Length: 189
Image (cartoon, rainbow, N blue to C red; front, side, top):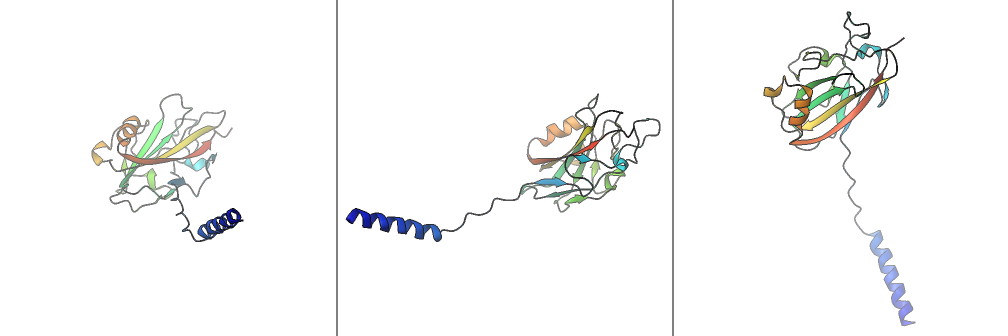
């Protein structure tokens, strides 16, 4: 009986202790990139496509889509934004460096990256432009345009005309985190 009483007291103590423990802190919300214009892996509106009249694959208006981000890592003081097409025949990439010291911005409005501004430093895209230029997708299957936002503590204006590969290389260290958002587009036939 003595063993049974001890077991009962032990079980009761464990139940009591489990009811009075401090709950664990909730994990922090993840760094996230979204757009009010399209969901992840959803089609992009035609207005976000390129607008070169001499290229029949450019059927849009080259209006940059709105982008919003939440919960950047502590210590972030700048962002690099890249737009890539993994299916492109060449290394197609466009990027803008959003320099904000300290980072107080959490969004880019529709069309904001389509023209020069003092809110960002434009890098050189494969089109040779320092501003957004939308995709010029050939006829056929969907292309997946990936917006990549890199939170960093190292981007400086002196790198503002580098190509996309050099941006990614320089942002690696010390970069904080990165997030992506995919928008699909195909040439309307």
